[in-house]
Every structure is written in structure tokens, then in C-alpha cells.
View 1: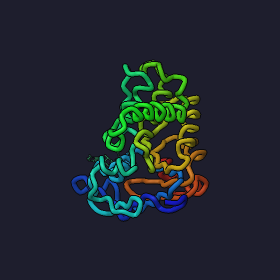
View 2 (view 1 turned 90 degrees about the vertical axis):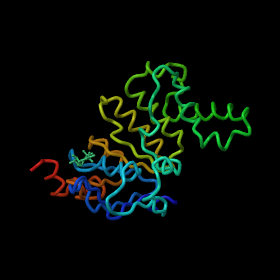
View 3 (view 1 turned 90 degrees about the horizontal axis):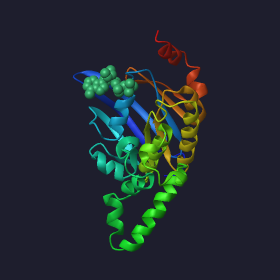
View 4 (view 1 turned 135 degrees about the horizontal axis):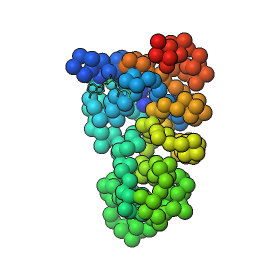
Length: 249
Ligand code: ADP
């Protein structure tokens, strides 16, 4: 996919729970190279959309196209191997392992071993190089030898990001990456997302509209399972329906 092409799309995506439509007829286009936000009030269906797109949950109706392929019958692990990766998918941080070992573990997934088993010595070497590269990308290189449990909350999230990047995602789905963070950490993680978004596509659920306005190219507003508005932050924030949904009236 070239920058700007549609890399991930939902067509008529619907999810019903016992007849209640949590997500209703959602049409979504995510463009390669963009940072795209999914926002909306609680219960709008954001998490359900993430679950559907990553195939954690079967859709009741509709299609999901990833890189032009219908992935409606593909399992979640395979979807992840194809590069559509959700942040918590492998992002369990082991507190008693060092920061470096956490990334090593993430890198030693079957796919990596499958391509490298026949050159074990160079594998070990390249594994360490790659792990340090990822730690550098999230500005944790100088913390490599600390145990993960010693990291601040914000840096733990950065480590999670590194372990997610170990899956080599093309499309990275981040579920409230700034949740529970203070001002400083929010800035730091926003910078990191900007960095890791280079050459990738990011779709994120985020409540902090200030972050969204500064970080995201496209914003999709969901309310009661349906798309209410879509566009740049300036566009959607001027929309009367969006204002109403956020005012709760
Ligand atoms: P958001 O992430 O935007 O807060 P969710 O996707 O979590 O919204 O939920 C959307 C709606 O679907 C809510 O009304 C929620 O109660 C309902 N819902 C979500 N998951 C389930 C489920 N497994 N069973 C029944 N209802 C669900």
C-alpha cells in the first residue's frame, strides 16, 4: 500500500448482542500512513469496532477488508501475523524481566524463529540488535537493564509499545494509549506514537481530545453504534451532532 491508499476498511459492519446493535452499519476507511482516531461517548461501540476489526469477535454482518483482502473468516492470530496488530495483543509486560528481555521475548515469536532457525548464531546477534532498535525507538535504550517493574507508568506503556512493534505491525490499533497518564507522560507517549507511526498506519481510540486534535489526521466519531461524523478535528468538532453527543443532550 502506498501512503493514502485504503489499507483497512469496514463495509456495513454490524454487531448485535441478543438483537441489540452495539455497532450498526459502520463504513470506515483507514488510509495507509495516517493516524486515525475513533472517538465517541462511553458505550458508543469503539471497543466493539476494535474487536471486530482484529477478528477477536465475529461480526453479525458486514465486511472487513485489510490490504484489499476480505479477512472476515481469518482468525485473530493470523490477522496479527499479517500485520494488523492490536496494542495489548502481546503487550503483557513481565515485571521481573529486564526491559531488554521483555522485548527479546516479544521478538522470539514463532514467525521470527521460523525464518531464522537455520542460522542460530546470527539470530541471537540480530535479535539483540533488533531489541535495542525497538528500545531506541521508544526512548528506553538507557533503561534496557532495569527490570520492567522499576519503570514509571508512562515508560511501561512505552515498553508495551516496543513489544507490540516487535510484531512488525503495518496497522497498529491502540486502545486508549494515554489512559491513566499525567500531563508529562501524555506528551511523551504522543511523541512516541508520532515516531512509530512513520511508515505505519495507526488507528486509536482516545478520550483526550487535545491529544486527538494534535496527533490525528482523521477522526471518526461514533455514537450509539453509528458513525456520527468524520473528518479533520476542525471539521468534526464544528459538527452540531458531535457537540450534542458530547454534551449528552
Ligand atoms: P465503547 O468502547 O465505545 O465504550 P463498547 O463497544 O464497549 O463501547 O460497547 C458498545 C455497546 O455494546 C454498549 O452498550 C455495551 O454495553 C454493549 N456491549 C459491548 N460488549 C457486549 C457484550 N459482550 N455483550 C453485550 N453487550 C455488549
